[in-house]
Amino acid sequence: MIVEELFIEYLFARIGRPAIQIVFWDGTQRGDPCSSKRKIIIRNPRGLRRILFDPIMGFCEGFMANDISVEGDLVEVLTEMNRGLSRNQPIHHRRCLLRWPHFRNSISSSKSRVNHHYDIGNEFYQLWLDPQYVYTCAYYYNSQTSLEQAQIAKLDHVCRKLRLKPGESVIEAGCGWGALALHMARKYGVTVRAFNLSHEQVSFARTRAAQEGLSDRVEFIEDDYRNIQGRFDAFVSVGMLEHVGAGNYRHLGQMIDRVLNRGGRGLIHSIGRNVARPLDRWTVKYIFPGAYAPSLREMMDLFEDQGFSVIDVENLRLHYVRTCVDWLARFDQASDQIQKMFDEQFVRMWRLYLAASSAAFQSGDLQLFQVLFARADNNDLAWTRADWYATEQ
Image (cartoon, rainbow, N blue to C red; front, side, top):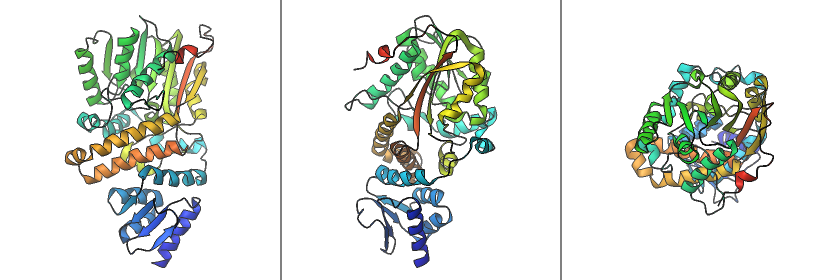
């Protein structure tokens, strides 16, 4: 096994020799001998073959199958690995990326890909999300903020940026389980039309709207964003751009231009990257088929051709680190229930996904952008951001 061990050592050298110890099933050790608190255990020859054949995919699939395990804090181990991978991955040119078919999500493929992730059962998400089922980056206004408080704070942060006024109309593309749409109507007095491709999410959101007596002010529509019609005072999309595909950004921008009133404004909240680069193949295969996290330069395709001006960009990356850590803690607490609902491999897959997400934000591989925009000739804009933060606790 000497050759295989040396290849593992070579791979670790390629990613900057992270502070991780590698332990093989026979007790042989490689990697950093001083990192006894962070270990990757290759439990059998099959786990080793996985890594040798395809290091990233092999590690993730080996973890799912329990051929590979981790001792110590999983987020810390993955963060160490991710820092090295981020420094050593090539930067792809965006034109090359757009040739990839999964960056051009059609209406039919978008629905099947959304169903893959979001329609696996509301009971599953209920076990580890907050009571409103907000499945996007929270906003922690101090270190004592709970996940529940942080998600409400995020909803308010979005609404304050849009400076919503009673009586205005809002279009939301990709509404999840409806928390933002209901919050906008309930607290800010606006009417909302919210589009989403997930049947389970839309059904849940409609039930919540009826229970709260908001059905006359919030309409949830099970349809693709490309079919949005009408005119609105504000556009908002939180956590949907990742599913649009870079090849469709101009189409999304054209839709926003078509439906936004002259004095309207919009906000897009999306996972992003500092440079154009595809997500790893494991995430795209098992977790988010068709997903793509854009750089800010790529996001400009939404705005430039339509004459929109970017008013503000905020990066909430560190808030997403904390959000994923909170989700993972709750997921781990509910792991026995989740295993009964699915199986052990599913639990390991989702635990890896949540931990890897936290690690990607921690290492700076992923960012979280909130981009506020308006038409170029809109002069009815506030001069400062003071009102965005004045009401924070």
